[in-house]
Length: 203
Length: 215
Image 1 (cartoon, each protein chain N blue to C red):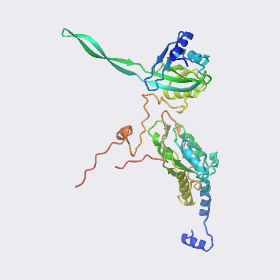
Image 2: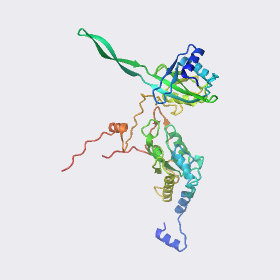
Image 3: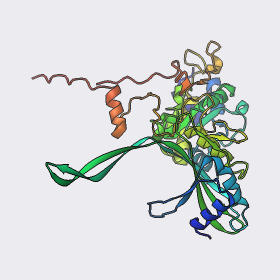
C-alpha cells in the first residue's frame, strides 16, 4: 500500500498513483442505485431529493431502479408495518451484492410515533443490517443527501481484503436474511437475533 | 331534502315490517341518523338508493362503532315510609346496556345533490351474533370499507363478495379497534416514557433501589 503523503506529493507533480481498491470503491461509491421503494411520507421527501431542486444526481444516486435485481441501495422510507416487513426483507434478499440499507425517518429506525402500536414494526434493523439511519419525521431532502454521502464515505473506506471486507467478497457470509412469517399477533420471529439484540439498560 | 321523519315514514310505508328509529346526536353538528334493523337493512338501503325523490347513489363512507356493555346508573326518587313519615328517598338504579357493534353508512345523492343520510345498523351482540347484511351489492364503493370494518371490528357482512382482512394479515387473530382489544405485550425500552408508556415502562423495567451515596 502506497503512503498517503507520497501519493499526494506525486499527484502535485502530475503523477497519478492509485490502488485498485481506491479505484474500485470510487466507482462503486459514485453509482449507488437506489430501489424505487417508498412506504409513507418519507418517500415524498425521497422523491423531492431526486428532483431538480435537490438533485440527487450530483451524487450518482439518481437512477432509481424499479427492480431489486438492479439496485444497490434500499432506502426504507417510511413506516414499516408488520404486514409489510416480510416483503421488505424479501426485496432485500432479491438485491444483488453489494447492497446497502438506509433507514430513513423515525418510523424506519424505531417505529416512530407508532412504536407502541400493535401493527408497526419497531424498526427495520430487527431484520436487516442498516448502514445509515436518518432521524427526522420526515427528514429533509438534505438529510437524505447527507445519508447518501455518509454511505459513499463508508463505501470508499471499505477494505477489499481482510476480515472486514464487504459481504460480496466474502464467500463465507450469507447474504440472505430469513423472511419472518405472519403469526397470530406478531411476526415470527419478532426479530432476527443475528442482526439485532434489544438494548440493555445501564443504571 | 326531506326531513329524516318524512324519510322514516316513507320507509315504513314501503316496508311495514322494518324497525326504524331516529337517533339523536348531541354534538355540535347535531346530525341525526336512521337506525334500522339488520333483517330489513338491505331492503331499506335499496329503497333509499332507488327512490326517485332521494336517489342516494353514492356511499361516501362506511365505518364501525364498538359499543361495549355498559352499566348505566340512574338516580330515581322513590317515596318510602320511614318511621311512619312518608319521605322521598333517592335510589340508585343500575341497568346494563348490552353491547353491540354498529356500522354507519353515509349516503349522498350525486344526481340530486343532496345528503348526507346517515344509516346505522347494529349487531345482536359483540360475541356470536355479529352478522349484518352487506351493502356492497348496492354501493360497490363500500366493498373495501366493509372489509376494513370486518378486519378491525369483526362485523361479518353477509353477501359481501370478498370478505377478507384488508389491513391486518390473514393469520392475525383479534379485532384491534374493539374497545376491549388487548395488544400483545411487546414493550421495549423507551428513553423518555410518559403517560401510559411510563406505566408500561415501570412494569417492564422496575427501578432498582438507588445505590447509597458514599460519605
